[in-house]
Length: 201
Ligand code: SF4
Ligand code: SF4
Image (cartoon, rainbow, N blue to C red; front, side, top):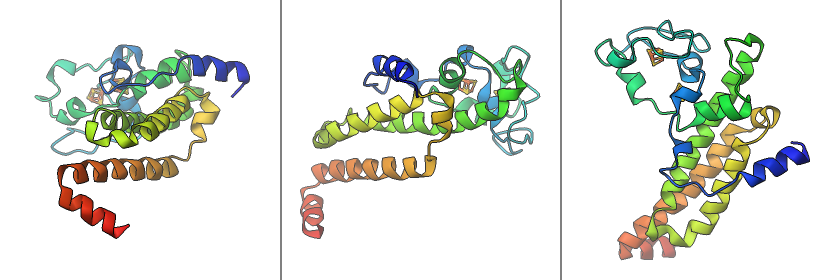
């Protein structure tokens, strides 16, 4: 990342909270990424098979779902349940500065890869910000807040830096931290569990 980009990104960092709109899908500012990138398998959730990285036949030229009003009735409850946690508009508007895979097919593969990574990063942000709202985990809040800030910084990185993220390693680190949070909360609810956890250390 260039120093000017890093400076710009740093100035946009903030500690997110769980209800921050940045962690909710904003489909009006996205180029229909989930409807292209993800695989659909004919099932109770989806009425059709669709391979990854191919536009769903129900996606129109303006990145709108042609059957949005009747997704459940037409056999697509999985689309109603899907949540990108804000990854779609972040990739479209920030990472690729408003460009899209339709008018620039040469960036489609990079956008797809970036969306997969961003989706995981935003999922991590969603869980970690939830942990920040648990009073019983307050002893870990500084660590969780730092992790949240680092992840948010990654989401603001230039495409090449984002695409280089080792998402498996990222998941391992976040899962370990969330496990610590979970253990801390459980111990606070049950003194006998706390004694057991302490004796096992
Ligand atoms: S990727 Fe997210 S923001 Fe984009 S269309 Fe899908 S749900 Fe909406
Ligand atoms: S049915 Fe609509 S919401 Fe579901 S993948 Fe296709 S275009 Fe997207």
